[in-house]
Image (cartoon, rainbow, N blue to C red; front, side, top):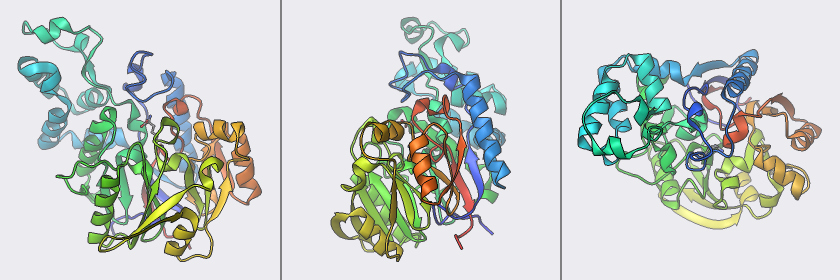
Length: 394
Ligand SMILES: NC(=[NH2+])NCCC[C@H](N)C(=O)O
């Protein structure tokens, strides 16, 4: 039977994570902004935190698939190798001659080394000796000939599973564009896992997984803001309806700024009828309701619209603490970005003490992990995980 994911909170069986690797080693104060990091992580420590996160999931009976393992396996296949290399080598940056040389260099690598190069990138210093190229001479030795993908560990954003379907995202930010094709490639090597289908390969409108919340079977919320555009939400809704994967899609406007880059930075589901929400947005959150045939109504307040679509009386909102500085600090540190292991059981960063306490007061069981280095890219347990299989909540 093909694994499936229908909700945010059904008992989690299998998840895809990416253990941060050589790509994090590339971050410097000069490139961090462009590569979407707010700090320079201590890499070994980030890996340790990630290993502990994976161990926490395993101790709750969750099978953990690591993206690098899938990718290396996929890169045994010639077509996959060519696709990965084609996507990584940008002739607009390298020019024709050097582009060909870099292709040749990558083609000579074994699957594991190629996976390292595709995720960690290549600097001009790391290119083999070769032709007398203006491009080579005019670039600094530490400039990137192939960009690294330091955000790859946020596996939630680059692909998502809705029902049986795995959808490769269309990434909104140039720094993350290649992640989605790399992830698609990694999964394509494992057809047993269900395969990947793009919403529509001709459609470039962005939709990132951090914006897509499976509120209940057949009911999706899509944040529209910095990463997902109205056109992306519309085409995603159309694709979901066409394949019978949703009966209602709620498009939820969120402020276009760094702190609220995805819907899951301000709200995540913690139980079948409850979310943890950043108090500053709680009252203002609205939704456009879209149903098959692209019938659109709204906007109206989000929670009643969501409850109606979900067929429940009320969608409970637990907040991050009283609006103000404390809540703002914890929202920035991904206090609202929880990963549910089952209804009423979530993984959260330890540091967000107020939010965690409030969730516990409301009867939610909170398992904490450290996230001091992992969080420097602005992502919490939900962003760091792409559920591959969940049971339906009972
Ligand atoms: N689903 C999420 N909230 N993901 C967080 C992604 C963080 C990443 N550095 C970015 O800016 O893209």
